[in-house]
Length: 275
Image (cartoon, rainbow, N blue to C red):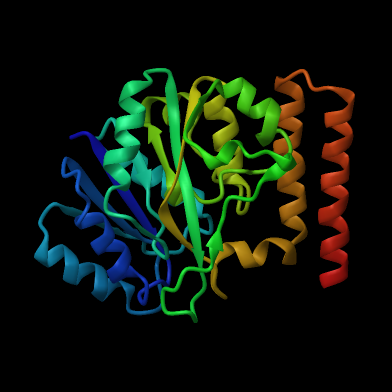
């Protein structure tokens, strides 16, 4: 088994069919599919059971209580997995059918890479699948994301991830499983920044490859965690936790330390304006 695909779900019954089919129809075929339901209150369970009855290669797990953390579900799926590579395919997103093949090609050509990710398209829940915009903002005025590239993990941290999470969406990421484990798994005490925190730790021990093609489709809707970030002071606390890890682990310039403080201030002011 080469790849373990993990779909962690909570109350996304309306999105599940497209998500599951975008995995099952991948051009690359050597994968297992693990679908986890975190005690949904909609009809997610019946949707998942329907697909599991049609495709015996699907493994399912239904929590009896809600875990309270998406990152706990990530870790559960990884602990159940058998693949050399991990794709955490969030239940409200969907993929282009060559996502796995192209991500694996990049991973296999670069043995030091622990994380491959691609560009994404962003959709909302009202536009019936119409393209909205590329999710890859040109942070720091850089055009580096316009083309495929390999980068040393520590350099990526110093250039971009020291300040903000420039990896837009975990559905766009393929992990090397042993690097996910070596990094210590996702911090499931977090609710907002566990993805960024994990990427930082993986890139401290491995390198990165980026694919400029938008092979992932990322939904932002009323129920997505993205829309809850700035409604909680817990988000700022977790941003500060990630920044503290980076400052302990990397030698940052004075300018970059100031940028971190300004970034935290921007979040604080945005939260106070909204609340």
